Picture (tube, one colour):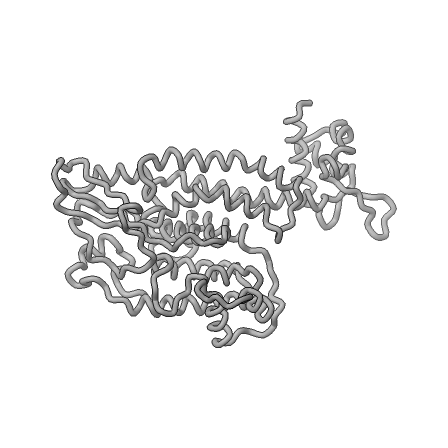
Length: 420
C-alpha cells in the first residue's frame, strides 16, 4: 500500500473514531463500520493497528478500559480529536474562498457598482467617516474606455476598504497565527499536519490574489474592467481607500476584515441588511463562529459599571503611557489580551476618525455581538463602543442632502436616510 493511500485510510478512520469520544467503541464494532463504509478491511485494520495506537506514530487510537469493564476499547486520542475539529473548521475557510472566487467584483468597494451612466458627480454622498487614505499613494484612478487623451470632464468617487483583497492577503498569516497561538496549545505534530492540510488553501488564496489584482489593489481587475466599460464618456472614477489602520493583533485585524467583507456582501444579497438572512452572509459568519468562539468563561460574576468601562477605555488608549497599564487592566478587570479590549483600541472621545467608516463598523459590530464571541463583560464594552459610534454617526452632517438626493439613492440606496 502506498503512503498516500495509507494516510487517506488513517484520516477516514480518524473521522469515524471521533464520533465515539465519550462512549468509545470495541475493535470489532469499529472494524464492522469501516468495512461497511468501504474504508478498510479487517486485515488492513489489524495490519496498521499498532501504528495507529502508537503516540509517536499515527497517534489515532488509545485503548482505555471503562469503569466496570474488563476489556479495553477504542477511544480517539486527544490529538486526534483536535485535528478532526480543526479540519471541520477549515471547511468554512474553503467555503469562504469559494465565495470570494465566485464574486470577483464584490468586497473591495463599500457597495456593489452603481449605474455609472446615471451619475456624473458623486460629491453629494453620506457623511465621510472613517480613516481616509486618499493621497495618490493609496488611490486608483480609472478612466472610461471612451475617454479621449484629454482631461476627463466628470468624475465619480467610490470608497474602498479592500476587504476582498485583504482577506486573500491575510488568510495564510491568520491561520498560521491561529495554529501557533499558545492559548490553544496545539502540539508540533498537530500543527505540521494542519499546515499540510491547509497548503492547497494557501495556494488557492495566493492564486486568486495574484490573478485578480494585477494593476490595482483597491479593486479587482474584473471590477476595474466593468468600471472602464460602463463609465460615461470622458469620465474618471477615483477610488479612495477608507478603512482603519492595520491592527497590530493578527486575529483582531482579520476579524475587522471579515466584518468589512460581510457588510459588502450584505449590500448585494439582502433587501434590508438583515443579519444572516442569506446563504452568502452565513458563509462568513460561520468562519467567525469557528475561529472566534472559544467558549471562554468569564470568571467575574459582577458586571462593569459605566465608570469601569470608561476607565478601561482610557487605559486602553495607545497614547496613554502609564506604566503597566496592561497589567492594571488584567489584574483589576481580568482582561488578558482580550479580543474585545483589542477591538476598541480605536475608541476616541474626540470623534477622531481612526477606524472604518462608521456605518460599516456599526453594522459589523452588531453582527459580532449577535454571534456570541464575547464574554458578558467584554460584550458590555463593545456595546458601549457601539452606542458611542451611533451617536457620532447621527450627529454628522450630510453633504448637500437635498440637491444630491438622486446621487445618494443611486450610490447608497440603504444609507440615503439618516441612520437609526
